[in-house]
Image (tube, rainbow, N blue to C red; front, top):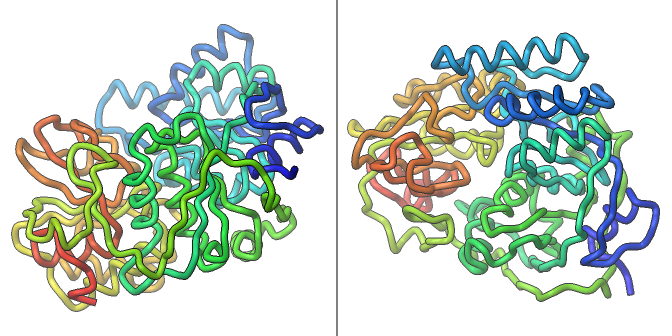
Length: 415
């Protein structure tokens, strides 16, 4: 009997064959923190006696970037000073969101990655076992260079066909979450397989892996294949390529079969990610703000989709459209290609790379009773800074179409 992707990746790191349920201690290839979780991690590291290998530690200032309050500014100062003293990698304000930068330059196939942020799972798109942990757990991993893991059971998502126009990875992610429920994959690995995987590009894979945690998954894993190799070439890391695929006879808890050809645009309505509806069922719901960005959907491909819908048109008078690229590289390329100007001419606010409104710290906090249609990954009550605000989640295509009309709109009506 062969191995699932989770068993294969963790087993390679441990140097032995593993099965779901096994407990193992393995070496960490990358551990990272951001400015929300980093201060506690550093406090624990100081108590433990420091970081073993600063070259495997990354610190990101992305959640409150630039800082909107003096307390956060002092936290940022402490993070900068730590990196200056230890040599840990620092990605300061404006560099971009931790998970996006990790995908662009730090994470590769077969890596073991832990981060003090639940959406660290996004690294699974590259064939890495990447998972979020608490600040203290990450501090221990940084101090020892090792982490203990329980090999998760696997839910295999078999993909067939390819996305239709106006449909993308966000719709696939929402479909899976809506099918399983918010706790349907607790401490399991979502493994994406089947003939349709080759038709899912890296941007969409990153979106899907990012949202695996929204149904409780410990990891969201894609095979390392030609799509992976091409992405590594584009980011100057072709030498990091390692082919990885699950064995056809590997044991899984159950299978989900999805025909991408029949998938349509979906929307998660307040206040739960698994409250998923076809866009046509909620069309007409009024929105006050639209946010296109975040680690989930702030890549160039996402911005291109939104730009193609918005170019030459104007955002509805009653809507605030906030667009935030996920990294500096994305922002620069979007600007070079003219996307930034197109967004501004359409009436959008375009901001430098940050988590921004997604975490409710700044750059788009909602007013009482306001509705935001967002491309981010969570719509919990209070997520965007106000428990009296409401959030629905959708793809960049749905977001851009809705910004034009002022209400939730099927993008296929405006494409």
